[in-house]
Length: 219
Image (cartoon, rainbow, N blue to C red):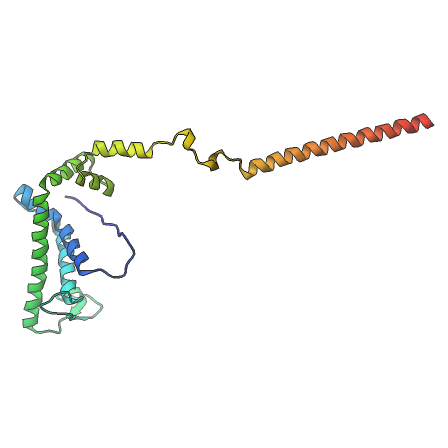
């Protein structure tokens, strides 16, 4: 089994139809890969299938994203989930419409499955490369995955990353690191001020001593 975590690329309150279709393709990748490589399927893709079905249902029943049914929202949202009711929605449409909804949902999922199958068949070598990398490291970052898609091995990716992340030469050290900090300047100022004060005190002592000497001579 496996798990794929998708991070949002940008903050947005809306999702396009094409993005939702692509999401379904991504979710079906595991199931299709099982069928292609193993010639069998397992229960491992249950969550992916649940999420794919949920997306397709919302596209048809809430978002009005099918040509056959048009921009219509089906089912009243009760806000509560009861046994026998889908997502807490009360059915307010006919059996004929219900059949159309079922057909449209299945059509979206079938289309996503076919797209997924085509993509994996055309990139079967990369599929094996990713599987090999996962056996080696158990999990892959987005950067590592993209490197494999570009035809690189993990060893090549690691070597490039070491070069990029290596410490800079001394000549490349930013000016800020070589500059004197405000604290150092403050310390130097204090030392100079202290030296001036000591010098002033010594002059005052010498002046007082001379005055006392002159007074003694006059007496």
